[in-house]
Image 1 (cartoon, helix red, strand yellow):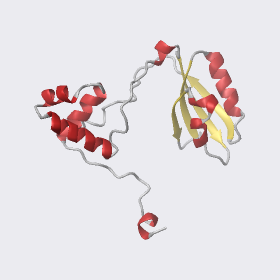
Image 2 (tube, one colour):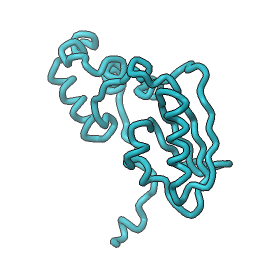
Image 3 (cartoon, one colour):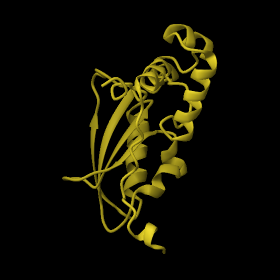
Length: 166
């Protein structure tokens, strides 16, 4: 390990954006399929400028990827669960890609407090949720689960631009 790696900050480097970057990002978080031409017209800049800025935002890691936002309810996933996990001497990272869990998980958080991890997951019904919880409890580091089901979704935006236009 060299001196740079040894003294490296565990935090990600914050990348600065100017107003034009923020406006482009705001438009793309609203509609990821919006063409560079439409963005350039709305912002009064050239298509090349938009292309270069999006390329810069992508290379810097601010834009990770362009993906559709799925309406889970239209696919039959009407039940959202927030699941707290108490773990013993293990990590939950491997569960993210494990077969019985992968298709239902939206988010996995390593947290402080009463639980060691919080999962946000979608299910078709309570039977599917029950099977998921029982499978979780068979995993070695999982000691206990605590599940809350969501009654009403007030806001759920995984592509939120709230940070962009501060």
